[in-house]
Length: 411
Image (cartoon, rainbow, N blue to C red):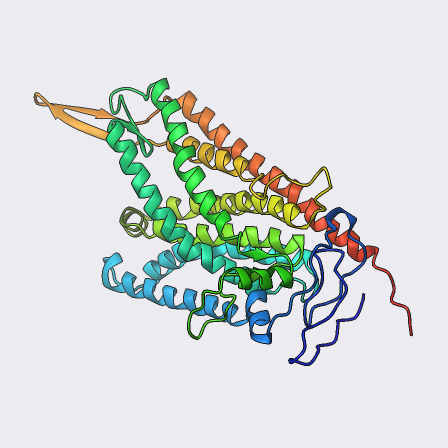
């Protein structure tokens, strides 16, 4: 490996030759390792960042400590709510074990998957964990808030247009007959236009603040001189100086939104009632698969962004736009929710003229429910396959670069 470039005096800007990967290495960064012809750009010189800004855009270690502290505080809050409101038995071993399993299901899939990918594909110091956690927090707070408002508005719109067949209630013939084909087609379009476009767009929007070089960070500071007291000037930017870093940030972004969304679903009043009174944790366990889905969708879009940022503009394989890989996750997300919705059954009973009438309240007949369950699995496997193919290409290029690194000559 080429040794780390020595740190220059703070009063001087770092000087370095352009990087074959992303246009140059900044102050205190490792020199580029070998040739990287597929992602070669040399249009930018190295930027000159202050030490404080440099630490900020690369992701401070305090982000990791903040992540741990946040989840510890939330767990203590969940235990307190269990003792005071959620469990009729108060805080006993059974209720503690129930709420602990529910709490673990909110983040275990996202945390384990992001850590595994980061640990297995990166070299020491290549992608700071603080970078991934900061992206996680962005999508887990700002993106989720924007998604919640927009999704709520869209659901109200669909319900206003047709109160008997809308996105979360495709029941034009419910409860005594099954959903019509027209309502099913309307439902899939609504899911794509709502959850698909809104959630995938806001997750991807959090990745647009990633910059491939310190020079791009400096250019961003020149373009936007907005500042907040006691906050670094580059507060809205992050430095992801390799395709692999961008791809991992995409997975972290999906994990952040999925975790917060899991809290909303798992600790809803209906799920809490089923968990503590009936011992039914289906809602909590089902969110694990949804967490992986969010991560692979955003990870796939991030791989396209990485190619757009780092590949040679003259390379025919370079995506035309940074959003070129966003359409597939949007459609897959909509199909995933559509297949899940139409599998539901809501039991219903009614007394009419002294007689009790009951219905299983299923939106579709048994065979169609099986077909949609199969479709749900196909959508998930297809999503994982497409993401794996793109991510392996990005990670494989980094490994090939390391393997072909030239041995430095002794002076």
